[in-house]
Image (cartoon, rainbow, N blue to C red; front, side):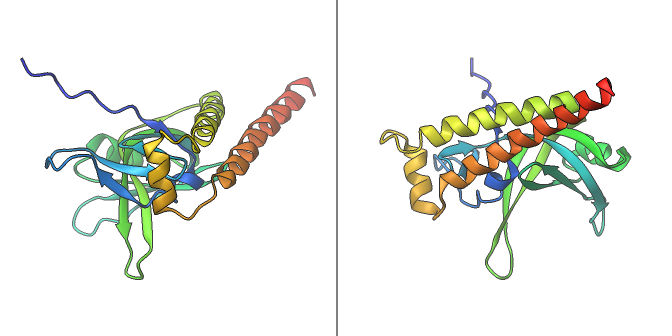
Length: 199
């Protein structure tokens, strides 16, 4: 009996790091081998889990519907694209009214522009509307995961960190700064809510 392939754990990643993850690779020559984006903090991502504010959406398709969503977290912007092969996500983007907090699980996709830059986006497997509490928990948990990756970055045995050092000329300390400001934005939001409820 053949084992069903297990789905890869979705990596939690902030927009600032995700948008720098322009290098992709496969770990085998098998046609169906998963494609990974290499995160600059030294981890591979076949799937990502992101939460943020959907600030705008547009149908950018020419012959058929192809929805682009712009999702903002405290560190930057994610772009998600859903068309006929992601019918549930496309339907969600068609119906939703921005601004709305959304949670997305999807696959990283890279695209090289005419001038040689690499754009990174997410092809969603699922999109759901969430509340402020879910968004705040995601920020805190994503900050923890990012810190763990940064702390393991200089470990000699970390092959993905070695790959990241080779492929990217980036300082992981920038992501530490980003995650700290993301945590501060959550705390400020909580302070405002407390002030409103006690006023």
